[in-house]
Amino acid sequence: MVDIHSHILWGLDDGAQQPEDTLDMARAAVADGITHIVATPHHKDGKYHNPAASIRERVAEANVLLAEHQIPLTVLPGMELHLYGEVIEDFHAAEQTILTLNDAQQFILLELPHDHVPCYTQQLLFDIQVEGYVPIIAHPERNREIREHPNTLYRMIEKGALSQLTAASVAGQFSADLQKISLDLVKHNLVHFIACDAHNITRRGFALQAAYNWVEKNLGVSYVQSYQENARKIVSGHEIYVPEPKRVEKRKKFLGLF
Image (cartoon, rainbow, N blue to C red):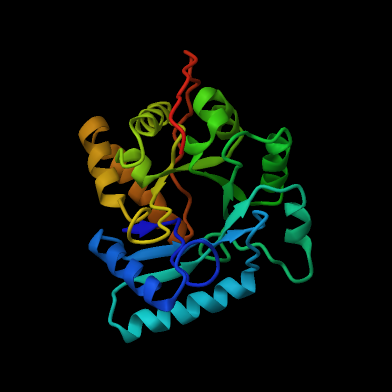
C-alpha cells in the first residue's frame, strides 16, 4: 500500500523533527499497512525552503536509518509545493529545485492556501500541464473556497488536474463537515487519491486504512481499489485511472474549518 503525501523526513518542515520521530512515524505507517511512502516536505510556502537536492539526500539517509532498524518501509522522494507564480521558472532553472512525486515522474503535489484559491491558479495549472506535468491538488477539502464552492475544484479537474483527499478527513477524524465535503467530492469523481499527510504520530498521524474502510462501507470496494491502484501507479510510473468529473449542481456551503 502506497501513501503519496507525508512529512516523515526529519528536520525539513513541521513534520518529523528528529530521526527518532521519523522512526516512530515509519513504525506507525507500517502498522497502518503502508509499504511505500512518498516524503513530501513543504517547499516555497513562505516558511520552508526544501530544494530537490536536499530532499533526495534526506530520503537516502532515511532509508538507511529504516534498514538499520529493520522497518519494512521504503521512503520515496517528493515535495508539497505551495502554489506560487514563479513555479515554471523554477522548473527551467539550471539547478532545478522542483521535485515531482517519486522523482523523475510527471506528478506534482500542489498546496493551495487554506482560505482561498488565487486568481491565477487556473492559468498556472494550465502552464504546468503544458510543461508536461500533472498537478495534484493536495487536500482540497481543507480549502475554504472549495468547501463553499465545490465547482471551483471541478473546473480544475475538468482541465486536467487531479486531487488528493486527506485520510483523516475521509475517516471523520478532523470533523464531520470535512468528512461530508470529502464524500461529496468523491461522489462527483473529483478525487483520485487518498493520502495521510502525516506530520507526527499524535495529532496528525496515519489513517489510511481507516479512510479506505470508510469509503468501502459507504461507496463500495471499487472506489478503494481505484485509489490504491492510482497510488501504486505513481510509484511505478504508469497512467492512472481518471473518471469523468461531475459538476456539483446544487451549491453547498460547508462550515467546518480545518
